[in-house]
Length: 420
Length: 169
Figure 1 (cartoon, each protein chain N blue to C red):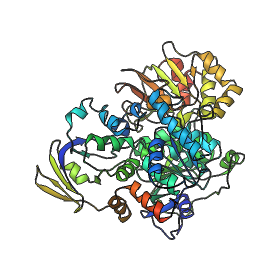
Figure 2: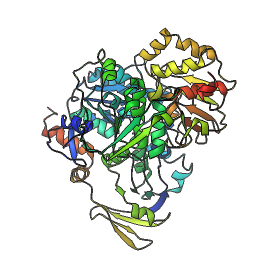
Figure 3: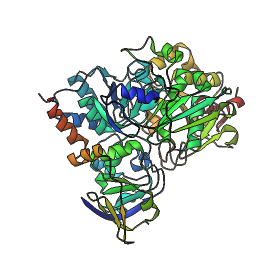
Figure 4: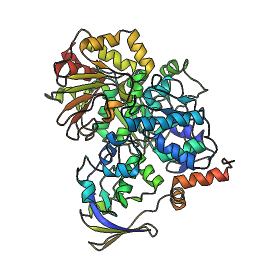
């Protein structure tokens, strides 16, 4: 009987033969990581475990990205726990401010997570790396502590839903629009405990950055992971980055899926997800007049170079609408530098935007753009829950970078067509 | 283990940002986290609830972020057990890992009201709605997970494995 790409990856990481969907496996982990929110508790667990050392100091990433550069004394104390631990345990992949990026943008970029890997992160957006053809899933702090100690984790073999995207994308329609559209169709629990496997003509033609965006938001449909079969685009992305050997896996043609869902993408327009759930997506033509106070372009979802390029293209020679705050945050230092070299930063600043060092910042209402009571933001981030970006009575609308940039110019949620 | 408490009933999709807003995640101190538990749902919530209270929720309870601070805040605030139609998968793992009892049941959700008194027997796998005088049988967790729980959570499992594999020498 055929197997899905995820079943093949899991089979290569466990001693068990002939396992079935729903069974619990112990799997070896290729790369594990945590951040300034999740790692401190895990480090305490490791220290209480009795183990002399971590399982492998080269396969652990510690990335202070949520409240960094340290927003207050408490955040500074949390980050210090990561820094001190990394020194003692000789953690190779600890990223200090100045080298740091948002974990899910940084790890693929640095070639630390690779096709065929089992990747586990103590952060819900870990499925991002599934875009490389890896099995990548998010856990909490206690699991992270167990993995840095033992190098393995327990998991239930998940069912897979296959999503086939047929046709060609319209201008201004991106990976973000495809995933918001999909979540709108299946709901925020439409793939709970399951894997979302994305394929079809539209995915084959999608850039790596847009693929990351899609897998990043698999968790917003409740999924355990999102995955895309690796191809030439994947190979071009990783060949000069990979720090270890890697392996391409493909699903068999007779693999068993829980469900197969097909979409014709030529009918999809830019999407906007209304408060307070990512499933509240609407086509841009159905949005109506929604004034904004802030626009955010960045995050682990949309802070990559493709995202900054499309935003700059729209903002070039334009000004941000009076009274609107546009905040642009590159995902990593390399993306930042690339944006400087291409002249994108000059476009943003000339348009009246704030341009920041990499941080999760506003996405979690942490810092660098927190909303007041009654304020409204359009954001390229991943969640629009109550209080996500600040005051419990503020509102977040989710969109692509193109829609967020256009909205910043118009002062209300806008179709990029209106400003180009 | 026997748990008894008053029911707080919740709709679908109670996310981890509502359980503990991210603005408080610059600490891992359980006592401090508990002070802000469910604050964006009801700013007075922590004053209104009592130790031992039980949550009964709809689909996808605990969806969203991987923050273990969410089940930690609930447990520290005194929530003794959560029964939901379904859970966000990371929240489910986290709750088991920290030893917060958690059960899936659509039937109990459909037949329970805010304020009902519920008794949970985690050993026999039965849940009683004392107010309505109805007993429910719950599906046992997989053996591997039961083993983790009986050891006292994942941390204890890891300690045992560290000794067994001689990682402590």
